[in-house]
Length: 405
Image 1 (tube, helix red, strand yellow):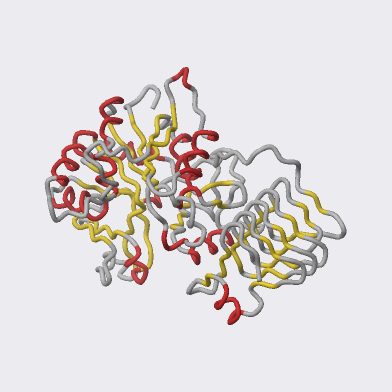
Image 2: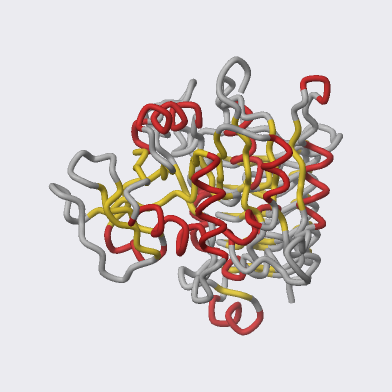
């Protein structure tokens, strides 16, 4: 951060993403396409870079080729100023083994910290959709003198089992408890039906993080996870404080999309987050010129509508050719929708082809999937459950390069 404290960004991007199958069959979850032209990892990287954290290491592990390629070809920073965004694969520096957890991933990558000698370390997750100015969180961290500051967001208590839950102290800042995915956590004082969920974003004073990682590595029963091990340890020592995400103000945000954050770890949440993008007044507005989400989608011609093709309440990316009818959908680059075809409430990834007279409803189709002329998906749910992946919420997913029967 120019003219201020030195901050190193570490993005945790090594998860398998099993709950997002089949989209993660042969790619890491942070590399999954989102919003037409973006990858999930673009959101956290854009937040860090917009917030002047210009030296960022992306820790990868499973099925990382697509992610590595996207980061290296898209996120080219100014080497003249010493800035970089770089993928860091599992290096096995502590022995011939994979990462045991997110804490172990950072422990095995401490050479990155030793090279940079930062004052603070921002450890952020790689698979959430949101805007956030990390400078405001850093300012609170420095002013509060904590060892770690955890970003939290209010969520219904009924959803607590999907998150790490933060119990704030009487001053609203000190963290009195940290529970990883509890089934029945206590509600907040004055708001018993909500809890503070951890967003997976942490700001550490460097020495605090290094000491905690080394102590955790000596614990044979530890799960070596940031939320499951490191945060409870520092909470017990009184070194953790809460940052309320609702207080974060991003330039160019609207009242409607202020405080938007989605964990898109399941097919249902992934689909719902896409539906948040497409209305005239979207819940999350991609068109914020003051805090842009950066990406690179290749050199393609503008989208083309011909033969009476129409699209409403939809995102249509470059290179698309629309000859049929598209409503409430998100189309990635190169999608072709032929005459007489109907696409409703769908998310179509790169180069999907929907043939003449075909119907696609409530489905997510991965890259290079094909819907032949006259075929349907999302019309007969019982048949779809026999042939394809169908989520609990009824979202149908077709894997990369597959063909609708």
